[in-house]
Length: 134
Image (tube, rainbow, N blue to C red):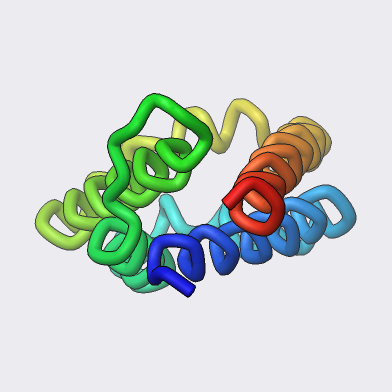
C-alpha cells in the first residue's frame, strides 16, 4: 500500500474519532482548551499535539491534485504552519483569548459540537476516498 494512502486512512480514522469525541464530550474538551490562552506554555502544548500530525502528512501525503486527497494535504500544511507559529512565537496562541472568552460556557460546548460534526464529516469523506476510492 502506498504511503499516501496509509496516511490518508490514518487521518480519516483520527478525524472520525476526534470528531466523535468533540461531539459527545464537549465539556471535557472545553476544560482542556479554555485555560490554554492564559498559560504562556499553551502554544507549546498545542504545537506539541499537532506538529507531529502535520509533519507526517506533509512528508508522506503531499498531493496537490484538485480532488479529495488535497483535503488531507491542505490540513497537514495548515496544521504544520500553525504549529510552527506557536513554537516560534509562543504567545501567539494568547490572541485567541478574546474569542474563547466570548464563547465560553454553553457557547463553547455548542461550538465544539459543531466542530466535532465538521471533523467527523471530513473524516468520513477522507475515509471514503482512502478506503474505497483508491
